[in-house]
Image (tube, rainbow, N blue to C red; front, side, top):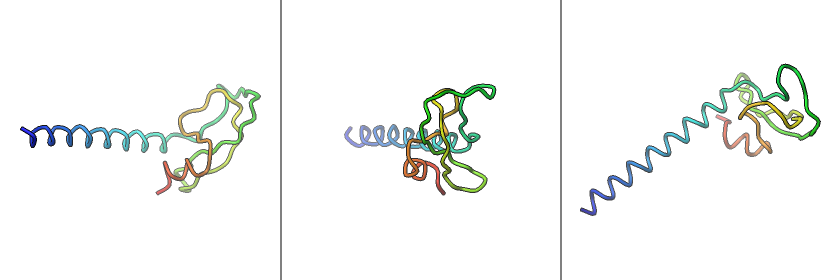
Length: 85
Protein backbone atom coordinates (compact mmCIF):
# COMPACT_ATOMS: atom_id res chain seq x y z
CA UNK A 1 0.00 0.00 0.00
CA UNK A 2 2.86 2.39 0.79
CA UNK A 3 4.39 1.77 -2.63
CA UNK A 4 1.15 2.67 -4.39
CA UNK A 5 0.87 5.85 -2.31
CA UNK A 6 4.48 6.81 -3.08
CA UNK A 7 4.03 6.15 -6.81
CA UNK A 8 0.87 8.26 -6.82
CA UNK A 9 2.64 11.08 -4.98
CA UNK A 10 5.59 10.90 -7.39
CA UNK A 11 3.24 11.08 -10.40
CA UNK A 12 1.56 14.20 -9.02
CA UNK A 13 4.88 15.93 -8.30
CA UNK A 14 6.25 15.03 -11.74
CA UNK A 15 3.17 16.41 -13.51
CA UNK A 16 3.37 19.67 -11.53
CA UNK A 17 7.03 20.11 -12.43
CA UNK A 18 6.30 19.58 -16.12
CA UNK A 19 3.43 22.08 -16.01
CA UNK A 20 5.57 24.74 -14.33
CA UNK A 21 8.42 24.16 -16.82
CA UNK A 22 6.04 24.47 -19.79
CA UNK A 23 4.58 27.72 -18.42
CA UNK A 24 8.09 29.15 -18.02
CA UNK A 25 8.96 28.35 -21.61
CA UNK A 26 5.74 30.02 -22.80
CA UNK A 27 6.54 33.20 -20.84
CA UNK A 28 10.03 33.37 -22.29
CA UNK A 29 8.75 32.99 -25.86
CA UNK A 30 6.39 35.98 -25.57
CA UNK A 31 7.26 39.18 -27.40
CA UNK A 32 9.20 41.71 -25.35
CA UNK A 33 6.94 43.19 -22.72
CA UNK A 34 5.84 46.73 -23.55
CA UNK A 35 3.96 49.44 -21.73
CA UNK A 36 0.36 50.38 -22.42
CA UNK A 37 -2.12 49.27 -25.02
CA UNK A 38 -2.07 50.48 -28.63
CA UNK A 39 1.02 52.60 -28.06
CA UNK A 40 -0.29 54.43 -25.00
CA UNK A 41 1.95 54.62 -21.97
CA UNK A 42 1.50 54.96 -18.24
CA UNK A 43 3.56 56.99 -15.78
CA UNK A 44 4.96 54.57 -13.15
CA UNK A 45 8.54 54.60 -14.58
CA UNK A 46 9.76 51.22 -13.20
CA UNK A 47 13.01 49.68 -14.39
CA UNK A 48 12.16 46.14 -15.53
CA UNK A 49 13.70 43.37 -17.61
CA UNK A 50 12.36 41.36 -20.51
CA UNK A 51 13.79 38.28 -22.23
CA UNK A 52 14.76 38.57 -25.90
CA UNK A 53 14.59 35.04 -27.33
CA UNK A 54 16.33 36.13 -30.56
CA UNK A 55 19.51 37.19 -28.75
CA UNK A 56 19.10 34.93 -25.67
CA UNK A 57 19.54 37.82 -23.24
CA UNK A 58 17.61 39.77 -20.65
CA UNK A 59 17.31 43.44 -21.55
CA UNK A 60 16.35 46.41 -19.41
CA UNK A 61 13.40 48.66 -20.24
CA UNK A 62 11.25 51.21 -18.44
CA UNK A 63 7.79 49.86 -17.63
CA UNK A 64 5.11 52.48 -17.07
CA UNK A 65 2.85 50.25 -14.98
CA UNK A 66 0.06 49.16 -17.33
CA UNK A 67 -0.35 46.68 -20.15
CA UNK A 68 2.56 44.51 -21.18
CA UNK A 69 2.68 40.76 -20.72
CA UNK A 70 4.21 38.10 -18.47
CA UNK A 71 7.65 38.50 -20.10
CA UNK A 72 8.50 41.21 -17.57
CA UNK A 73 10.75 40.72 -14.56
CA UNK A 74 11.68 42.91 -11.60
CA UNK A 75 15.39 42.07 -11.79
CA UNK A 76 17.96 40.81 -14.29
CA UNK A 77 18.60 37.86 -11.95
CA UNK A 78 14.92 36.81 -12.03
CA UNK A 79 14.85 37.08 -15.83
CA UNK A 80 18.10 35.14 -16.18
CA UNK A 81 17.00 32.40 -13.79
CA UNK A 82 13.66 32.00 -15.58
CA UNK A 83 14.61 32.26 -19.24
CA UNK A 84 18.32 32.16 -20.01
CA UNK A 85 19.41 29.00 -21.82
